[in-house]
Length: 340
Image 1 (tube, rainbow, N blue to C red):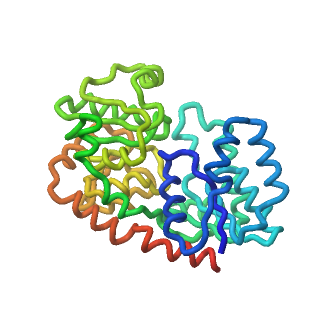
Image 2: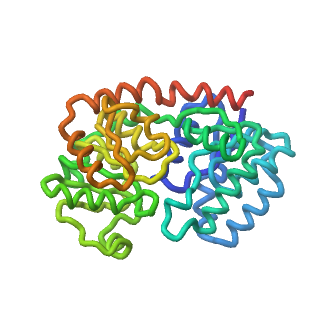
């Protein structure tokens, strides 16, 4: 079968390892549309990009057996249109945007994505949720039924992460790590406050917009001396950073099924996760990691201290992820849905 899958624009987003995993491990021919090569030209010309989307929205993707959408409304529309050309349409729900997560409410593009997810995407032939909480939320709030296929990771790629390579290249070691972005729902300010509360520990933040200038403009705070902001680095460097860190911390207000946490767990690191909806799916007990109440800096500090002292959480987390969230084990279910 030939599968046209939604393209990856953000290598730091959770959909990058999800889509990359399907492409790598599926038994079918999976291709991003438009291809990475084509996107280089489209991204240089706004007019050309708009014409491309308009053309595809009329012509569809009749050369493919399945169109697999994720988050972009135009690609969901492409899946819908392509059914008239004989394609089947699969849609994966990763996350819904919530008003309470953003000061000033949702932006127009976020409302557009929510509307497309709960409206147009509900018409897909097969609908997938990457977590139980997203499945339950869609069913309870919108009567949308989905198949649960947990987000997976490339375990072998994680196992190639090299701590010494990161230390040698960046001169950083023995630190607590955050990987995300400066975007509000990732709650980076809370991690910065954590660093200020633990001056005897090193902290590192990696991701788009995470530099001193933007941090000061966005949060109007003084950055602690024990915090290093690295902005964007190569994908392999991110995994190496996970291997070099002592603890991985996620401060997000909401996540569908955070791939970065799975990767850190697969590398054998203890994790500290905000108790958003569904976080217990990843960390069901202190045996595998530590949860803290949203925006509770005291619980975050306590959880980080526990993680730093833990002798077993990292190893237990690694075993749990390898046993349950490897793409090699999960891809069979995705392929079954393609074939159904």
